Length: 306
Image (cartoon, rainbow, N blue to C red; front, side):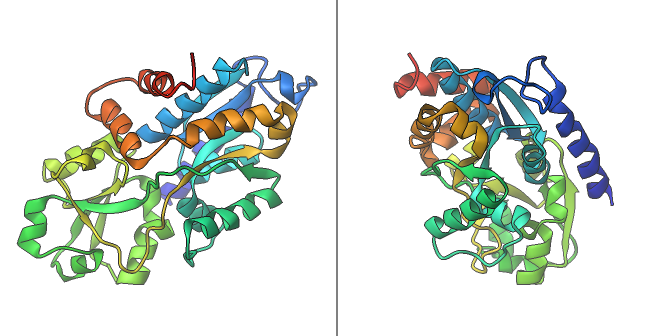
């Protein structure tokens, strides 16, 4: 019930975004779409903040007006805000889009097939996907090496052997997602997971490091995973799908701005490898840099802005 209430409240908040920042793209604004700022939303964790800055800064460098509306919320909330007209675009991950929005839990055989299914789904709703990223940011269960050694943990299935509750740190929406407790219970029979719901994603690894939890949900592009300080449990039964990122955008906005809009965004996406995303995430989460600074440096380095 708590998650449902949070979803309702945060969705209502997200829907008010279209009325913020005078002159924004609203249904009552008679100006042509091409003359309105593109409202870019992001979900509520570091990588999304960086992606939002990358796309916003690249578009602004081309003279396109942008409103960066970051930290909207989970996939469910942000996608609903887009569909309701409060946003024009946001970056999404194919695996989560399929399982949590399109309600398709049978995993596609390839990333290309996943993209095609997601594209078809969005097209039916008046939206579309731009180019998908080379990197895949998938969910993964992470433990400390000592914990893995003492319990003989290599895969998610091994957690079933543990006696007593297994304390798991994750975002609140993990409780009701197929790519969450629902799928872990259905495919692995894991009834011993006790969720510690964390609104602040940055608290996941400190909670694990301090022993407050036994396992945390990580993302495969987390900067913390670039070293050997953590063990990633394998997922042989495929609860967590590949997570190539692609911007979801309203089709009328894309058409109004012409091919230059997609070309600018796609040029950024094409450069985003797993190694690059880990470095940028690390710069923010571990080194304390600001997402806007990290994004600006990347764009200059790759000649995407002057």
